[in-house]
Length: 311
Image 1: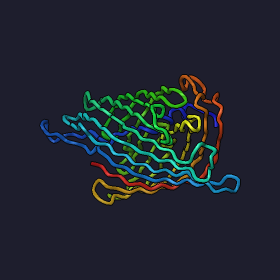
Image 2: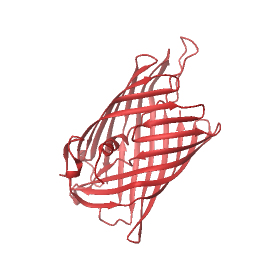
Image 3: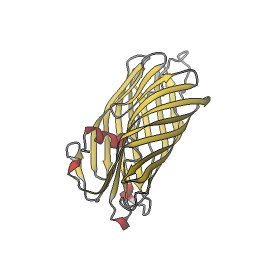
Image 4: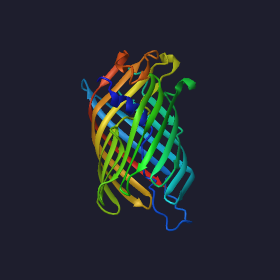
């Protein structure tokens, strides 16, 4: 599949999701301070089986992340916060042999996110995400990826917010610089739409106080690309999974929920590249000019489960 604008955007947005989850609410009086629950813990597992030449294969992933608010102030309709976190992703390939230089790959990120509100309507959101992404067989500075974002969040009404900005990412294949657009829209009392357009969207319907049914469209998995050890030539693996899923979320207790989902990977692709297969800037330079050492393309179903806690 040829690289497009969407693919460039996917590669670094998988580490970041726009959210107005820290909703700006009106305080009861001028002196009161409301602290939204912007801290989080999330963990999940995904399983994607497929068959190539009568051989059963699968891609499995385990994710876990925690984000802790170091600053969390809300006053006069303005929210300021500083979030620090750690995110882990483990990717496993089954029955793919030695074609991609290994079967187990890891990604560890330390995201730092800061928001400064100028008013109840406007806020500046800045995020830096250093990431170690490799097979962890000989860890060095060559395993590091660096991403960053700056976005202006605009609250049009109680039910609609959006954000516009720019994202930067240094990947194993080169550097990306692209615009970013986020949205949070409470369409009705029970229906809402959120995400980073057009990369990751969620349409949710509130069945009752504890249950949510929804549809999600996601483009990306793990850290996107992983550096291999020097024994394999320090090459890199690039993983692409673009999927649509139906999900069900149930609130077991206050601030604690579980989710199950199932869907289809309409794009599922593994590519192994030599370390010198790079472009200077994307999307200004074409990723299609790279020559892969190995490639696997196969669509297929996917199932996922996860837990989430907000504090």
